[in-house]
Amino acid sequence: MIDSSSPVSAVPPVGAWQQSTVVGIRTETPSAKTFRLRLSVPTGYLAGQHFVFRLTAPDGYTASRSYSVASAPDASSEIELTVERLDDGEVSAFLHDEVVVGDQLEVRGPIGQWFVWQGDTSAVLIGGGSGVVPLMSMLRLARRTGREDLVHLVASVRFPEDLYYAAEMPGPNITAIYTRGTPEGWPRPAGRMTAEDLPGSAIIAIAAYVCGSAGFSDAATAALVDRGVPTDRIRVERFGPTG
Image 1 (spheres, rainbow, N blue to C red):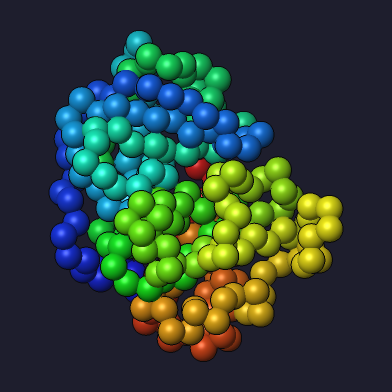
Image 2 (image 1 turned 135 degrees about the horizontal axis):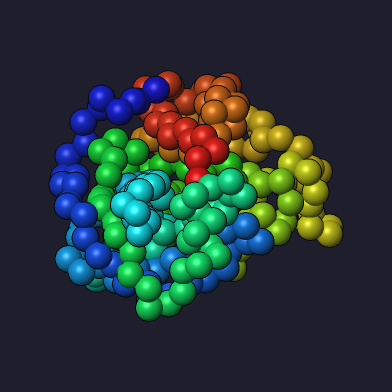
């Protein structure tokens, strides 16, 4: 597998802290919202990178968390970050419960120099739950540039209502897997992802991108290997329950 020591060319440098203005908030699932931010300093980024929110209390206490970019890279000064609300999460709960359009938030980025897709090579994208967020940036980039043929996204969630970006998910290069309950008439029974769920293109893809919890990422990696994907083509980004 490729790890964080692997170099990637043409990665934008990490910027300083800057103010951003919330220009839109959209509900994705019962526990996830997308925040559209207008940066005070236009900042380039690559699909797969993330930004950090920093909140500062009146007494000077600060809390910061990293969230992946969901929007496709372009020349605008706006980015979209999708945040899952955790009940005990300092930052995610504040963003969900307190932030409204027009508020200003302090952000820094882009961050991440290896879990990125430049948009010009074939790739299979595998996300579990909120792990689909950076992969959506890649899919949107492929669609915006007319190269949707290069990618195939596999999104695994527990129930239909947990599927992020549901309105954008239908398509021949997207596979949705439901592990606990399925939509009515869904052809695949509920169950965990297996090697048989992966597209044939995974075997010949230049890279496989896996994002999710540690357990999901390990299982997805094993499924890719079972499918015949060499480990040096697999890039993994794991996350834990921080909020």
